[in-house]
Length: 115
Picture 1 (cartoon, rainbow, N blue to C red):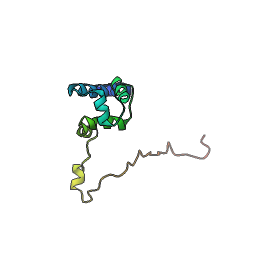
Picture 2: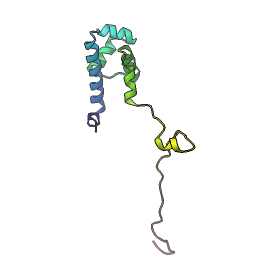
Picture 3: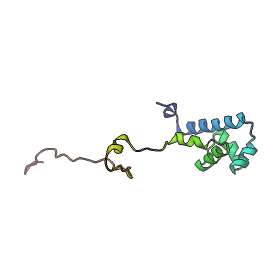
């Protein structure tokens, strides 16, 4: 189990944004320079670094400005065809979920007059 499973959404956001701030400081980039490279305002960078919330689009822009966009693949890796599908003749990739199927069992044989 990852440490993130135990954290609230807000704490995860704060942790990720704190990592971006650490990376910015490690590279000796000012907030103004990062804001310019990411195409956002300095206030947005400040809010992000305080963990006050930013949009996913802004988060991605900052990742790109820091040249960390390749790490997005680690979040949701590309799904490959399963080994079972490789050996089957169809080689089809699932396009939608089937959902849960409910099975209805008769509780008992009903007879006239039962209530």
